[in-house]
Length: 375
Image (cartoon, rainbow, N blue to C red; front, side, top):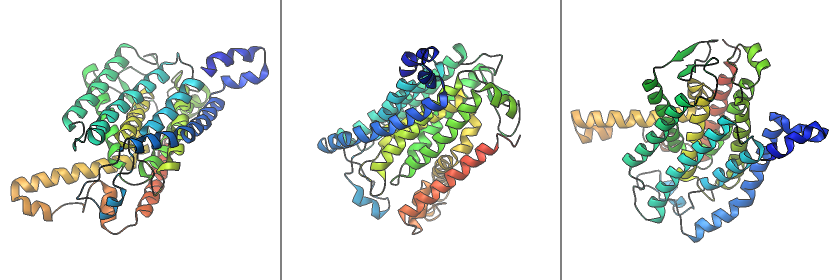
């Protein structure tokens, strides 16, 4: 909105020429998001407390978590508000990259909101039954995949609509047949939104990792949207994709503001409302940037958390079926899944786990950035 209103004034007033620069608007979006989070956070937390929207803690989890029972959840509303509003203020509203990503955040956030509502407000312990939540996520992924085939955000002459690039290789593109591309997109969005959801188990863990990932994607979006930078680095130029840096910067600011309230001891949890919205947004940004495989690197900690659950569940079911429940209970791969709970069971302090996982997140982001030159 600000871009649409003020950027044209740059032709006659030098100051307003700043609004034509993505870097300036990204910084503005980040600061605006941070201020909005600070402004709406206390009010939303207060309303959640008044409505008794408290976190449900599973009985078989770490004993230290029982003290968190009743802490307000659905705090993802803070992140969504503080991301969407600045994006609409600072980014051009006719940019397809922005439109698709904002819709993705709202759609996946709505799925999480319904799940949190049923689980906490309506008192249904299982929330939105896993089957129906997965169906809603698959529906979004399939819709996104089909839309990108019918309505490509970039010219097929740049990168095929059903194509994706591969890190560490210049100008290498994998092109899928349409049906496989839809399945691929669905898997990326669904898988990563659930990965962020599984990571959200300790105060500040998923929030801090999301800030790191958003910073990395903001840089990639900015570079891929510049013809000079892509030419120098031997990357595919994606016209208009630079505006995603504004969205990612807003997400950074929103998560930073939320971390103020989510830092140990947390005053509020993001819940599925926030984790699914963040994961869905990252998956969509990676798809739009034709960098789906890069998502695995940038979000390496999220992926590790999800894989730990898959390994734990798969081996348990195998042993239970082949050797019985007692054998399966005594031969778990991890003491508890997701991975952060395994380290809690080993006796690691919660704050230690969070900070060390943040460090691993920074390492993953640096490896991803290294792909810009290691090609």
